[in-house]
Image (tube, rainbow, N blue to C red; front, side, top):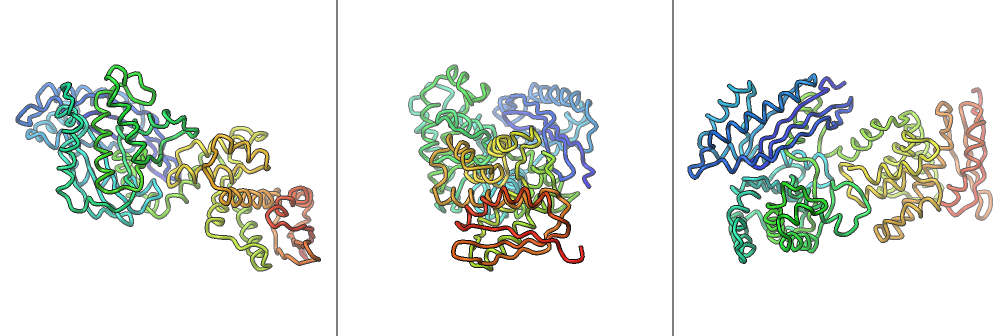
Length: 513
């Protein structure tokens, strides 16, 4: 049982300073109660000798005092306060940390460049589907790049430049060759590391710059799905956003949908870096992760209390469990549906009628757990609400296509609604994938009919061939299956659709029950 209930994370970066207060559930899912971001840009207070000026220190103290007033309204179990590149690069870092502690009573943990890189990667491997790739976290004054495999960092480097640095170096004046000079500088920096090489792996990006780029691109192409976690962009997509940013003035970018006003002057160099890195590693795709440094810090803190709460090998499973818990799904019904479905598929396989693949079993497990989750909103339209909730929620470990697949499985009701849900997602899934999804949805719907009372138990299922094209499904129950008989008789058409056979149901009460 979770003892952590409320945790605050303070993240002092070169460009922004942020306070996030999280509320934790019994399953260690976390939800934001407060998210206060201030574009302080502490980097501008570093003088030529890399000393953080008193004006910058005073500004930082002022912001922390504001955060403490906000935190005072909550009963916090822990406060995690960290500082990164700007203070790390300051030659008076000890003076800065001492001043903050003396003026506010808050002790800041100064993260090394390796720690900063590792916490971002920690969050990525525990909230995405990837077990190998490159990560990039671009801040105001530094950029952390890692190469990881099987959830472990193999190489990392913290480049001493970020969006603010690149802006000042190449875009502060109206230099027509700013793009060319900036790209040459970035490529020269990247080329010094032999492990940053073509591997045809995904680049997973975290941080505000990548979030804004993904958000703008979704609006550019009229993207039908909400949420940008695990949103994928190609090299051409990144080039498209770069060209858009490059041709607009700062004032025009401040009014661009999807772009934060405080990033209008620094988004172009950020996009340029992603393009250069994409080319350097011959990336498979560019993917945005909505978990980053702050969530990595929080996940590690949670894992101190519950070691298995966040691990790279249980991302999808825990996402499904936490989502079901969030929307008060019927755990007893879900378990019974899954047990019946697995028994049914085993009998179908034994009878030579169906040979389920691992993908079918994955859909089945997640789908039975989240089946008609939308009943939390309204029972009568649970299918509609289920599809919307699942298709438009940031689901850790699920690509947008797999999120759509899960939404179609868990919301399945009939063919017409299935096709209605698909209208705005034309060509997302091929016909073979759609067929599998509909079949799994049909099986879950039939099994839900057999689990309607939640208390009766199937003792045995057995398929027997009656004649050509007709099979009898013998179902032996613990109690009289009155409710199950009525519901399953109406829904057996779903099983007949999957098998292409006529099914007769033979309900029997277990002897001696």
